[in-house]
Length: 381
Image 1 (cartoon, rainbow, N blue to C red):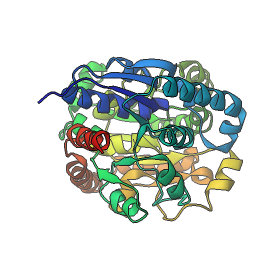
Image 2: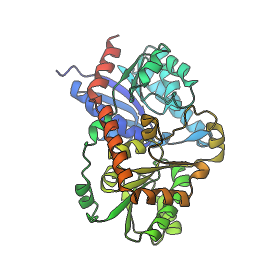
Image 3: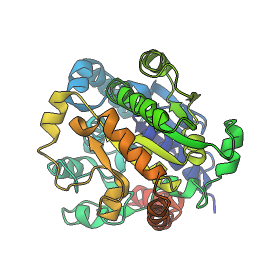
Image 4: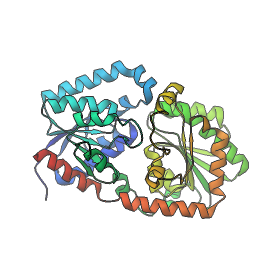
Protein backbone atom coordinates (compact mmCIF):
# COMPACT_ATOMS: atom_id res chain seq x y z
CA UNK A 1 0.00 0.00 0.00
CA UNK A 2 1.28 3.46 -0.91
CA UNK A 3 2.50 5.56 2.01
CA UNK A 4 2.58 9.35 2.51
CA UNK A 5 5.06 11.48 0.63
CA UNK A 6 8.52 12.25 1.90
CA UNK A 7 11.64 14.10 0.83
CA UNK A 8 14.97 12.32 0.39
CA UNK A 9 18.36 13.76 -0.52
CA UNK A 10 20.74 11.68 -2.63
CA UNK A 11 24.28 12.01 -3.94
CA UNK A 12 25.39 9.77 -6.79
CA UNK A 13 28.70 10.09 -8.59
CA UNK A 14 29.44 9.21 -12.21
CA UNK A 15 27.37 7.10 -14.62
CA UNK A 16 27.18 3.89 -12.58
CA UNK A 17 25.94 5.72 -9.48
CA UNK A 18 23.39 7.60 -11.58
CA UNK A 19 22.11 4.29 -12.91
CA UNK A 20 21.89 2.63 -9.48
CA UNK A 21 20.22 5.67 -7.93
CA UNK A 22 17.67 5.95 -10.76
CA UNK A 23 16.63 2.34 -10.26
CA UNK A 24 16.40 2.90 -6.50
CA UNK A 25 14.26 6.04 -6.92
CA UNK A 26 11.97 4.20 -9.31
CA UNK A 27 11.38 1.52 -6.68
CA UNK A 28 10.93 3.97 -3.81
CA UNK A 29 8.22 5.80 -5.74
CA UNK A 30 6.14 2.63 -5.65
CA UNK A 31 5.98 3.04 -1.85
CA UNK A 32 5.96 6.84 -1.79
CA UNK A 33 4.29 8.04 -5.03
CA UNK A 34 4.79 11.71 -4.13
CA UNK A 35 8.45 11.18 -3.34
CA UNK A 36 10.65 14.27 -3.69
CA UNK A 37 14.35 13.76 -4.32
CA UNK A 38 17.16 16.24 -4.69
CA UNK A 39 20.93 16.59 -4.37
CA UNK A 40 23.64 15.50 -6.82
CA UNK A 41 22.69 13.22 -9.70
CA UNK A 42 22.71 12.53 -13.40
CA UNK A 43 20.31 12.27 -16.35
CA UNK A 44 18.87 8.87 -15.40
CA UNK A 45 17.94 10.21 -11.97
CA UNK A 46 16.48 13.35 -13.54
CA UNK A 47 14.24 11.14 -15.67
CA UNK A 48 12.76 9.86 -12.39
CA UNK A 49 11.95 13.40 -11.23
CA UNK A 50 15.18 13.99 -9.31
CA UNK A 51 16.18 17.65 -8.83
CA UNK A 52 19.93 17.90 -9.45
CA UNK A 53 21.55 20.83 -7.68
CA UNK A 54 24.87 19.72 -9.14
CA UNK A 55 25.44 17.12 -11.90
CA UNK A 56 26.94 13.77 -10.95
CA UNK A 57 29.72 14.39 -13.48
CA UNK A 58 31.25 16.78 -10.93
CA UNK A 59 32.19 13.73 -8.85
CA UNK A 60 33.52 11.64 -11.74
CA UNK A 61 37.12 11.46 -10.58
CA UNK A 62 39.17 8.39 -9.83
CA UNK A 63 42.22 7.84 -7.70
CA UNK A 64 44.43 10.12 -5.68
CA UNK A 65 45.79 12.17 -8.57
CA UNK A 66 42.37 13.12 -9.98
CA UNK A 67 41.07 13.83 -6.48
CA UNK A 68 43.99 16.13 -5.65
CA UNK A 69 43.55 18.03 -8.91
CA UNK A 70 39.87 18.66 -8.08
CA UNK A 71 39.96 18.74 -4.29
CA UNK A 72 39.06 22.41 -3.78
CA UNK A 73 35.96 22.24 -5.96
CA UNK A 74 34.83 18.92 -4.45
CA UNK A 75 35.19 20.20 -0.88
CA UNK A 76 33.33 23.39 -1.76
CA UNK A 77 30.44 21.44 -3.30
CA UNK A 78 30.24 19.13 -0.29
CA UNK A 79 30.22 22.05 2.14
CA UNK A 80 27.55 23.96 0.20
CA UNK A 81 25.39 20.85 -0.15
CA UNK A 82 25.67 20.10 3.56
CA UNK A 83 24.70 23.68 4.45
CA UNK A 84 21.65 23.48 2.19
CA UNK A 85 20.51 20.13 3.58
CA UNK A 86 20.94 21.24 7.18
CA UNK A 87 18.92 24.39 6.47
CA UNK A 88 16.06 22.21 5.14
CA UNK A 89 16.67 18.67 6.42
CA UNK A 90 15.29 15.78 4.36
CA UNK A 91 13.67 12.75 5.96
CA UNK A 92 16.89 10.90 5.16
CA UNK A 93 20.05 11.20 3.14
CA UNK A 94 21.13 8.38 0.81
CA UNK A 95 24.71 8.33 -0.37
CA UNK A 96 24.97 6.23 -3.52
CA UNK A 97 28.52 4.87 -3.80
CA UNK A 98 31.10 7.75 -4.12
CA UNK A 99 32.34 6.92 -0.58
CA UNK A 100 35.19 9.44 -0.49
CA UNK A 101 32.68 12.25 -1.07
CA UNK A 102 29.68 10.82 0.73
CA UNK A 103 31.12 9.57 4.02
CA UNK A 104 32.20 13.02 5.18
CA UNK A 105 28.84 14.48 4.21
CA UNK A 106 26.94 11.63 5.83
CA UNK A 107 28.86 12.03 9.09
CA UNK A 108 28.10 15.75 9.22
CA UNK A 109 24.39 15.18 8.56
CA UNK A 110 24.14 12.26 10.97
CA UNK A 111 25.74 14.24 13.79
CA UNK A 112 23.08 16.91 13.17
CA UNK A 113 20.26 14.35 13.49
CA UNK A 114 19.58 13.48 9.84
CA UNK A 115 19.08 9.77 9.14
CA UNK A 116 21.76 8.47 6.76
CA UNK A 117 21.79 5.45 4.46
CA UNK A 118 24.69 4.35 2.29
CA UNK A 119 23.77 2.40 -0.83
CA UNK A 120 26.52 0.05 -1.97
CA UNK A 121 28.88 -1.36 0.63
CA UNK A 122 32.42 -0.17 -0.10
CA UNK A 123 34.68 -3.04 -1.06
CA UNK A 124 36.14 -3.54 2.42
CA UNK A 125 36.37 -7.25 1.59
CA UNK A 126 38.71 -6.39 -1.29
CA UNK A 127 40.80 -3.44 -0.12
CA UNK A 128 40.95 -0.47 2.28
CA UNK A 129 39.49 -2.23 5.31
CA UNK A 130 40.14 0.96 7.32
CA UNK A 131 36.96 2.32 5.76
CA UNK A 132 34.94 0.28 8.27
CA UNK A 133 35.37 2.94 10.95
CA UNK A 134 34.32 5.67 8.49
CA UNK A 135 31.18 3.72 7.64
CA UNK A 136 30.40 3.25 11.34
CA UNK A 137 30.62 7.01 11.96
CA UNK A 138 28.71 7.96 8.83
CA UNK A 139 25.83 5.60 8.09
CA UNK A 140 22.82 4.55 10.13
CA UNK A 141 22.34 1.71 7.66
CA UNK A 142 24.07 0.24 4.62
CA UNK A 143 22.23 -1.33 1.68
CA UNK A 144 24.42 -4.16 0.37
CA UNK A 145 24.47 -5.46 -3.19
CA UNK A 146 26.13 -8.79 -2.44
CA UNK A 147 24.98 -11.47 0.03
CA UNK A 148 28.27 -11.84 1.91
CA UNK A 149 28.52 -8.15 2.84
CA UNK A 150 25.98 -7.63 5.70
CA UNK A 151 27.74 -10.08 8.03
CA UNK A 152 31.05 -8.26 7.54
CA UNK A 153 29.46 -4.94 8.51
CA UNK A 154 27.35 -6.33 11.33
CA UNK A 155 30.49 -7.77 12.92
CA UNK A 156 31.58 -4.14 13.39
CA UNK A 157 28.22 -3.01 14.75
CA UNK A 158 27.01 -1.45 11.51
CA UNK A 159 23.38 -1.93 10.48
CA UNK A 160 23.17 -3.53 7.05
CA UNK A 161 20.74 -5.30 4.74
CA UNK A 162 21.27 -7.41 1.63
CA UNK A 163 19.01 -5.97 -1.06
CA UNK A 164 20.44 -7.61 -4.17
CA UNK A 165 21.45 -5.64 -7.22
CA UNK A 166 18.90 -3.45 -9.04
CA UNK A 167 20.58 -4.22 -12.36
CA UNK A 168 19.77 -7.89 -11.86
CA UNK A 169 16.09 -6.93 -11.72
CA UNK A 170 16.33 -4.52 -14.66
CA UNK A 171 18.26 -6.79 -17.04
CA UNK A 172 16.28 -9.76 -18.41
CA UNK A 173 17.50 -13.26 -17.62
CA UNK A 174 17.58 -13.98 -21.35
CA UNK A 175 19.37 -11.12 -23.17
CA UNK A 176 17.46 -9.83 -26.23
CA UNK A 177 20.35 -10.16 -28.68
CA UNK A 178 18.32 -10.17 -31.89
CA UNK A 179 16.32 -7.12 -30.82
CA UNK A 180 19.47 -5.23 -29.79
CA UNK A 181 21.23 -6.03 -33.06
CA UNK A 182 18.24 -4.80 -35.01
CA UNK A 183 18.20 -1.55 -33.00
CA UNK A 184 21.92 -1.03 -33.66
CA UNK A 185 21.61 -2.02 -37.34
CA UNK A 186 23.88 -5.04 -36.93
CA UNK A 187 23.37 -8.22 -38.93
CA UNK A 188 22.29 -11.24 -36.96
CA UNK A 189 25.20 -13.25 -38.38
CA UNK A 190 27.86 -10.68 -37.47
CA UNK A 191 30.57 -11.45 -34.92
CA UNK A 192 30.33 -8.42 -32.63
CA UNK A 193 32.74 -7.20 -29.97
CA UNK A 194 31.70 -4.45 -27.53
CA UNK A 195 34.43 -2.09 -26.31
CA UNK A 196 33.60 -0.46 -22.95
CA UNK A 197 36.46 1.81 -21.85
CA UNK A 198 34.70 3.29 -18.81
CA UNK A 199 32.67 6.37 -17.95
CA UNK A 200 35.29 8.59 -16.31
CA UNK A 201 37.57 10.94 -18.19
CA UNK A 202 40.60 9.37 -16.54
CA UNK A 203 39.47 5.93 -17.71
CA UNK A 204 39.16 7.15 -21.28
CA UNK A 205 42.67 8.56 -21.09
CA UNK A 206 44.23 5.32 -19.88
CA UNK A 207 41.99 2.51 -21.19
CA UNK A 208 40.43 3.56 -24.51
CA UNK A 209 43.72 3.47 -26.43
CA UNK A 210 44.69 -0.15 -25.60
CA UNK A 211 41.12 -1.28 -26.26
CA UNK A 212 41.08 0.39 -29.68
CA UNK A 213 44.50 -0.95 -30.61
CA UNK A 214 43.44 -4.43 -29.46
CA UNK A 215 40.37 -4.17 -31.69
CA UNK A 216 42.60 -3.37 -34.68
CA UNK A 217 44.69 -6.48 -33.97
CA UNK A 218 41.56 -8.60 -33.60
CA UNK A 219 40.18 -7.34 -36.92
CA UNK A 220 43.47 -8.08 -38.63
CA UNK A 221 43.14 -11.68 -37.42
CA UNK A 222 39.40 -11.86 -38.20
CA UNK A 223 38.38 -9.25 -40.80
CA UNK A 224 34.67 -10.06 -40.41
CA UNK A 225 34.53 -8.69 -36.84
CA UNK A 226 32.33 -5.69 -36.06
CA UNK A 227 32.92 -3.45 -33.04
CA UNK A 228 30.61 -1.20 -31.03
CA UNK A 229 31.69 1.29 -28.37
CA UNK A 230 29.14 3.00 -26.09
CA UNK A 231 30.35 6.47 -25.11
CA UNK A 232 29.20 8.01 -21.83
CA UNK A 233 27.61 11.49 -22.00
CA UNK A 234 30.14 14.27 -22.42
CA UNK A 235 33.05 12.01 -23.43
CA UNK A 236 32.65 11.92 -27.22
CA UNK A 237 35.17 14.75 -27.65
CA UNK A 238 37.78 12.57 -25.94
CA UNK A 239 36.94 9.40 -27.87
CA UNK A 240 36.82 10.75 -31.44
CA UNK A 241 40.50 11.81 -31.61
CA UNK A 242 41.59 8.47 -30.11
CA UNK A 243 39.65 6.54 -32.74
CA UNK A 244 41.08 8.69 -35.52
CA UNK A 245 44.62 8.17 -34.25
CA UNK A 246 44.64 4.52 -33.17
CA UNK A 247 41.87 2.81 -35.15
CA UNK A 248 41.08 4.84 -38.30
CA UNK A 249 40.03 1.85 -40.42
CA UNK A 250 38.26 -0.15 -37.71
CA UNK A 251 34.71 -1.36 -38.39
CA UNK A 252 33.50 0.51 -35.32
CA UNK A 253 30.15 2.04 -34.44
CA UNK A 254 30.35 4.72 -31.73
CA UNK A 255 27.16 4.88 -29.70
CA UNK A 256 25.92 7.75 -27.56
CA UNK A 257 25.25 5.79 -24.40
CA UNK A 258 23.24 2.62 -25.16
CA UNK A 259 25.67 0.38 -23.27
CA UNK A 260 22.96 -2.16 -22.46
CA UNK A 261 22.06 -2.49 -26.14
CA UNK A 262 25.75 -2.94 -26.96
CA UNK A 263 26.13 -5.69 -24.34
CA UNK A 264 22.93 -7.41 -25.46
CA UNK A 265 24.04 -7.30 -29.09
CA UNK A 266 27.65 -8.41 -28.74
CA UNK A 267 29.24 -11.85 -28.62
CA UNK A 268 32.05 -10.82 -26.26
CA UNK A 269 33.26 -7.60 -24.64
CA UNK A 270 36.52 -5.94 -23.70
CA UNK A 271 35.44 -3.97 -20.64
CA UNK A 272 36.94 -1.63 -18.04
CA UNK A 273 36.80 -2.96 -14.49
CA UNK A 274 33.83 -1.63 -12.54
CA UNK A 275 30.05 -1.89 -12.62
CA UNK A 276 30.18 -2.57 -16.36
CA UNK A 277 31.76 -5.98 -15.69
CA UNK A 278 28.72 -6.96 -13.62
CA UNK A 279 26.44 -5.65 -16.37
CA UNK A 280 28.34 -7.78 -18.88
CA UNK A 281 27.90 -10.82 -16.65
CA UNK A 282 24.16 -10.15 -16.30
CA UNK A 283 23.98 -10.04 -20.10
CA UNK A 284 25.85 -13.41 -20.08
CA UNK A 285 28.70 -12.05 -22.17
CA UNK A 286 32.21 -13.56 -22.02
CA UNK A 287 34.61 -10.72 -21.29
CA UNK A 288 38.16 -9.56 -20.90
CA UNK A 289 38.47 -7.17 -17.96
CA UNK A 290 40.92 -4.30 -18.48
CA UNK A 291 42.17 -1.52 -16.28
CA UNK A 292 44.96 1.04 -16.30
CA UNK A 293 45.45 4.14 -14.16
CA UNK A 294 48.01 6.78 -13.32
CA UNK A 295 51.22 5.15 -12.04
CA UNK A 296 50.93 6.92 -8.66
CA UNK A 297 47.37 5.66 -8.16
CA UNK A 298 48.50 2.13 -9.02
CA UNK A 299 51.47 2.30 -6.64
CA UNK A 300 49.21 3.38 -3.76
CA UNK A 301 46.44 0.87 -4.47
CA UNK A 302 48.27 -2.32 -5.33
CA UNK A 303 49.46 -2.92 -1.78
CA UNK A 304 45.97 -2.54 -0.27
CA UNK A 305 44.09 -5.33 -1.99
CA UNK A 306 43.18 -8.37 0.10
CA UNK A 307 42.17 -10.83 -2.60
CA UNK A 308 43.44 -11.72 -6.05
CA UNK A 309 40.34 -10.70 -8.03
CA UNK A 310 39.40 -7.26 -9.29
CA UNK A 311 36.38 -7.84 -11.57
CA UNK A 312 33.02 -8.34 -9.89
CA UNK A 313 32.15 -11.57 -11.78
CA UNK A 314 35.40 -13.10 -10.52
CA UNK A 315 34.82 -11.81 -6.99
CA UNK A 316 31.37 -13.43 -6.91
CA UNK A 317 32.73 -16.68 -8.34
CA UNK A 318 35.82 -16.61 -6.09
CA UNK A 319 37.77 -17.67 -9.16
CA UNK A 320 39.29 -16.27 -12.35
CA UNK A 321 36.40 -17.27 -14.59
CA UNK A 322 37.25 -14.39 -16.95
CA UNK A 323 40.70 -12.89 -17.60
CA UNK A 324 41.82 -9.69 -15.90
CA UNK A 325 44.51 -7.55 -17.51
CA UNK A 326 45.46 -4.81 -15.07
CA UNK A 327 48.00 -1.99 -15.42
CA UNK A 328 51.19 -3.30 -17.12
CA UNK A 329 49.35 -6.42 -18.32
CA UNK A 330 46.75 -4.27 -20.08
CA UNK A 331 48.42 -4.22 -23.49
CA UNK A 332 46.74 -4.29 -26.92
CA UNK A 333 48.41 -7.62 -27.70
CA UNK A 334 47.20 -9.29 -24.50
CA UNK A 335 43.69 -7.90 -24.86
CA UNK A 336 43.46 -9.09 -28.46
CA UNK A 337 44.83 -12.52 -27.58
CA UNK A 338 42.32 -13.05 -24.76
CA UNK A 339 39.44 -11.68 -26.83
CA UNK A 340 40.17 -13.98 -29.76
CA UNK A 341 40.49 -16.91 -27.35
CA UNK A 342 36.84 -16.43 -26.35
CA UNK A 343 35.73 -16.32 -29.97
CA UNK A 344 37.61 -19.55 -30.69
CA UNK A 345 36.26 -21.58 -27.75
CA UNK A 346 32.49 -22.14 -27.82
CA UNK A 347 32.53 -24.65 -24.95
CA UNK A 348 34.34 -22.22 -22.65
CA UNK A 349 31.82 -19.51 -23.52
CA UNK A 350 28.94 -21.81 -22.61
CA UNK A 351 30.53 -22.68 -19.27
CA UNK A 352 30.98 -19.07 -18.25
CA UNK A 353 27.45 -18.17 -19.39
CA UNK A 354 26.10 -20.85 -17.05
CA UNK A 355 28.02 -19.28 -14.15
CA UNK A 356 26.71 -15.83 -15.08
CA UNK A 357 23.17 -17.24 -15.08
CA UNK A 358 23.65 -18.45 -11.50
CA UNK A 359 25.04 -15.05 -10.45
CA UNK A 360 22.09 -13.28 -12.06
CA UNK A 361 19.59 -15.44 -10.18
CA UNK A 362 21.46 -14.86 -6.89
CA UNK A 363 21.37 -11.06 -7.26
CA UNK A 364 17.81 -10.87 -8.63
CA UNK A 365 15.69 -10.45 -5.50
CA UNK A 366 13.47 -7.36 -5.96
CA UNK A 367 16.00 -4.79 -4.81
CA UNK A 368 13.52 -1.91 -4.89
CA UNK A 369 11.20 -3.61 -2.42
CA UNK A 370 13.98 -4.72 -0.08
CA UNK A 371 15.65 -1.30 -0.18
CA UNK A 372 12.43 0.59 0.49
CA UNK A 373 11.66 -1.74 3.42
CA UNK A 374 15.10 -1.07 4.90
CA UNK A 375 14.81 2.69 4.40
CA UNK A 376 11.35 2.68 6.00
CA UNK A 377 12.80 0.93 9.06
CA UNK A 378 15.55 3.53 9.29
CA UNK A 379 12.96 6.32 9.16
CA UNK A 380 10.92 4.67 11.91
CA UNK A 381 13.87 3.92 14.19
